[in-house]
Image (cartoon, rainbow, N blue to C red; front, top):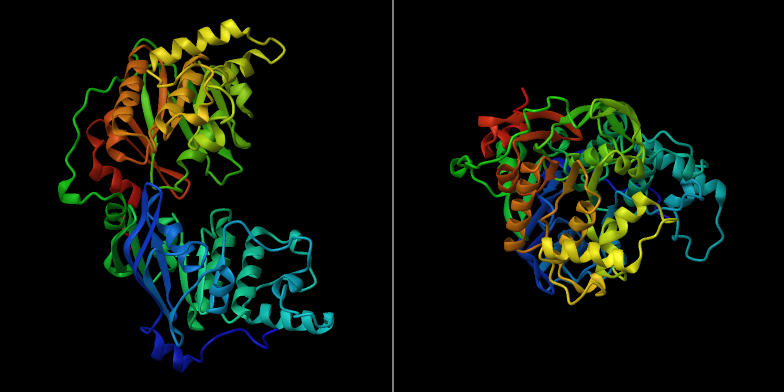
Length: 518
C-alpha cells in the first residue's frame, strides 16, 4: 500500500503547469472496414483538466482504449513524463505507467468496504491489518475531501461517492494521468459539483485529468483545454477561453459557420383538419435524468429532437414510449388522458418505436426475417393468439416488397443481412402494427447513402398519409430535410424549439451551444 496519495508541492505544480505529462503522437488504429484513428495527436499537461470531445464514432473511446492498453495501436508513439516512450499492452501496464481510468460503470466490488476497494489487490499475499488499512483509507479520503467512512459498504454509497472512491484508489496508486469517462452521466447537480471539487483539488496537486463527456456546460465550468476529434481524425486542441461554445459545436459537427446555408425542402406540415395533438405530454420525466419537458405532435407532422450525443434525445423519446421508467408527467393521446409506463401500453395507444441501437434493442439475430417482422404485432396481439405460418409469411412478404428488403427468403436469419436491410426489417416490424405515431431514433445510422435517402423519402410519404413521426438523427442535414419542427436539447434539458425560417444549421448550433457565459 502506498503511504500517501500522489501529488506535487505547490512550487512544482506552478513550474510544471505547462509541462506535458502525456504525449500521444501519430496514433493510428483500424478495424475491419473502419479507420478508427488516423494520425491523431494528444497532449496532456500536469495540473490540467483536458476535455476530449467529439460525436459518436469520432474516435474518443478508441483513443482511450489505445492509451490504456485495451487495443494495440497500429502506429504511433506514447510518451509518459520521466518514462519516455512506452509500450502499453494491457490495463495493468497502463496502471504501472501512472495511467488510471474511472469509467461511467463503476468497476469496484460493491460487497466490500470502501477501504477494501481502495486497497484491493495490493496486499501481495501479506496478512492484512484491518485497523491500519482503515486508518490509511481514512487519511486518504480526508485529504481528498471525500466524506465517507472507510468501513462503509460500497454498495450503500451513492454513485457519486462510488466514483470518488474509484478516483481515490487511482490517486493512491500514484496516477499521473486520470481518465474520467462520462463520470457525470448518472449524477445529479449536487453530486456533479462534489465531483468537480475533487477534480479541481487533483488539478492543484499536479494530476493531469482527461475528461470525456457530452455535457457542454460542464466542459466550460471545469476544463482548461479541449481536444476535438471527428471521424477518427484530430480537429484541433484549444484553450477553453479561446473556443466559444458555438465554435465547439461547429467543430464537432464538421460544419464551418460560413458554409452553413439553409436547406430548402418541401416538408409536410401537420394536418390542419385537427388541432388536437395525436400525442401530448406535460412535465414528462424519467429515471434517466431527463428534466421535465412538454411535448406534442399533430397528425401528419414530422418533428425531431436534436442536440449533441448525450444531450438527452434518446432518453426523451424512450420516456414518451415508456421504455424507461417514467417518474412524472401527464400524457394524452387524441386528447384523452392515458397512462404509458411501459412499451406495451404505448403500443396499445398506437405508438411505435424504432430504438437507437438496432443490435441491442432491435434485431434478434438468430430469428428469421419473417419472425423479426411480425414480432411487435405478435406482442401487441398477445402470444396466446399466435399467427399461423401462412399469416406470418404474408405479412413479411408485404413489407419485404414495400421496403425493398434484400433477403434470400423470409426464412433467412436477420443476422445474415446487411445493416441497412436489418434496419428496414425493424422499420417493417413497426409499420406492420399500423401506428398513428411512429418514433424513429437514428433510423439511418451506419447504413449506405442510398438506403438513407429511401428511408427519408418513406418518412415524408408516411407523414403525407397522416402518420405522425418523430425523427432523430446525428446528421443535422438529415433532420433539416425531414422535420418541420425541432426540439433542441442540451444536458438533458429542452432548451429551444425551432420552426420555419429558424430551421437552419446556424440557428440549431447556436441553440445547442446556448450562447456564451457572462
